[in-house]
Amino acid sequence: MHVTVTGRNIDLTPALKDYLVEKLKRAQKHFDQPLDATALLSVAKNPSIPNNQTAEVTLKVNGTVIRGEESTENMYASIDLVADKIERQLRKYKTRYWQRSSKGGNHKEPAMEAVDVGAEEDDDMAVEKAITFEAIRPKIVRSKKFPLKPMKPEEAASHMDLLGHDFFMFINSETGQVNTVYHRRDGNYGLIEPEA
Image (cartoon, rainbow, N blue to C red; front, top):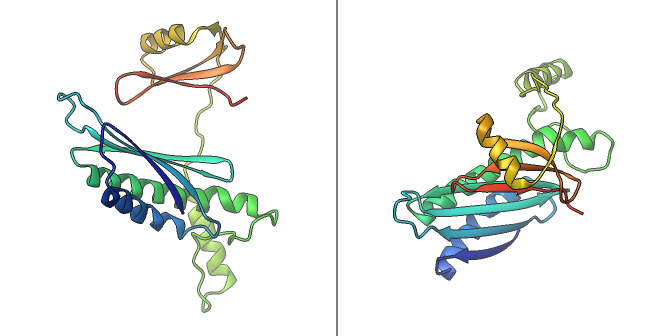
């Protein structure tokens, strides 16, 4: 795994970088191809923020973005938590999404990693496990349609706050594209735009 580490308001010591890389290497075991990760370690200088040491990690796997962020009072604890989160997300990605595309034969990964069928088990047992695994997956249980209105991102953020939502989709009046604004943990807003 190749990890690019940057720091904000923190001295990136070799020990801290090595610790992060070692923790993230555990996630590599789920994939044959090497993964590229980008990590940002930051410390908030505001003394009123109790969990001011944040570790953010972003990976791209076959065009899918896997991201984790954790904040604690200790950077090593933040790294532990975010590494665990990334490993869980990669495992979930592989067991849920990877095998769907591998059914077409494009990938060399096993089609159903979550179903561990031993040599002594017969096909009926394997099918029963696969059905059980499928039954516990989260499903889309509600769908909602609403008209997208052209507006500026600042206006969309105001609408989001008025509605009490965590995110808000709209048509950006400056670009004509569908965008999403969302609440960030630091109290600010984020804007998601499609890549050109």
